Image (cartoon, rainbow, N blue to C red):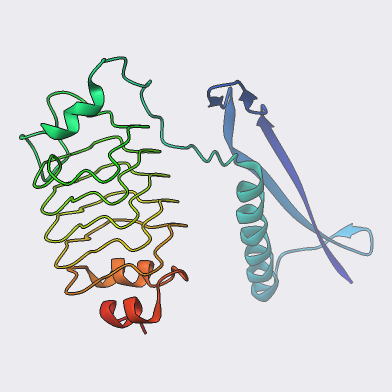
Length: 234
């Protein structure tokens, strides 16, 4: 009976944790793997082409396993800047940003985190909020028709009943946002994500969305049957 044995040598130091970040202090690769074969206590001659092939396949599988299990995987959350201390930072939404709308370029960061725009019907329409930070802000009942929110970060924000008609919501992160009853009529949703967002009773009439983005949003189980029909979910 032939026995395939192996040895592994590696030098990896464990990642060092800190309160604000995770650092891998040292990682030395590749891992060295040595394979050998024995029969009845003696080393087996590798004269058989079939055996050599079997050994190479086994060692290849072992190498993939070893690298996969030894390499640390670090899942980093987006690193947001500190909350702006500007006294009138919430009012900046009423001015918006007029440069680099498509690419989320701005002359000064628009920090709207924790701001309250509930039932704001006049001052947000048509504004450019490129790359705005909106997490945990409240826009419930606001009129946000024709707004441009390229690359905005709206994780955890509330947009219940917001009218986004004719808006450009390009590459916006709506993760865990409350969008119940929001109106996306003739709205561009290219590249936007809705992971764990609440989309009950949202209106998607004539929404402009790519095929891949459509597949992703259709996985959201909170969308009503009517909304799924408007989107064309299958």
